[in-house]
Image (cartoon, rainbow, N blue to C red; front, side, top):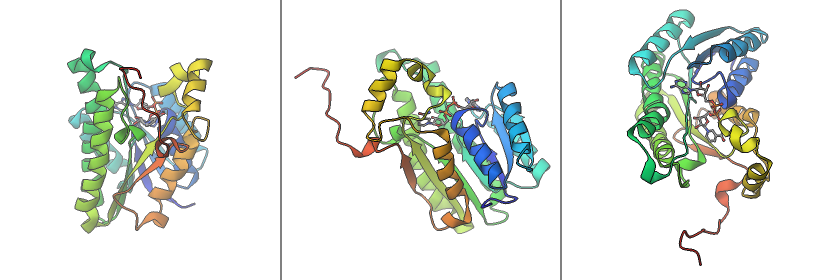
Length: 260
Ligand code: NAD
């Protein structure tokens, strides 16, 4: 029970990695604020499963890309639980679009949810955490904060920005003993990848690129998040942990668009 009676706010907790983190944190004794956007039934289901751990859950729908909604969500969470100890910026979206065809709408969607959202959720939570001079902020980034992914330029730009946000906030919040760390997952089996997971050839092709030979499980990311959220990681700040089955450690042969 490494998180007993901590209050954790997790964005995008109705699905995939966020859901797994919510369930793992609940298993570690934390009370959870489940944020989601347009996934009421899934969020309700996560809340029910959390309650089975004997901890409390609060379900708040809010679009993290809207600063006013972020403020309303964090105020509601603090009013309900009295404080926020742990903030996990997990909500994210990605769209595959060739760079030459990216629209303003594509750019805005990915940068506003994946980067602006994390920025203002972290700010609102940190404004509460500084009062106790203690807190944990965990940003769920991506291996694509470091390695390029053609046809995903806005997503890569947003995650690259999130990686630098993690480092900068870690420096700025150190005086308040608020830890800020990142998790950069590789290919994880979640609804975000359902097109690939449902296509055996596409799935096998992705697995061939991963030294571990398989997709990661949401629960594996959640285990890392639970450690980062715990007292055991008190001296860890400004770090981003890659959890990718070795994906980013290999030398991949560059496939030139010019052939040869
Ligand atoms: P998912 O699609 O299963 O979950 C995304 C969650 O974000 C959902 O709960 C959704 O409701 C929420 N969300 C979307 N837009 C929102 C908004 N405007 N406001 C609030 N919530 C919103 O995907 P996932 O794979 O679990 O992704 C979780 C995080 O992990 C994302 O940040 C994603 O970029 C990152 N990630 C995933 C993978 C992977 O392979 N699945 C790899 C690297 C990084």
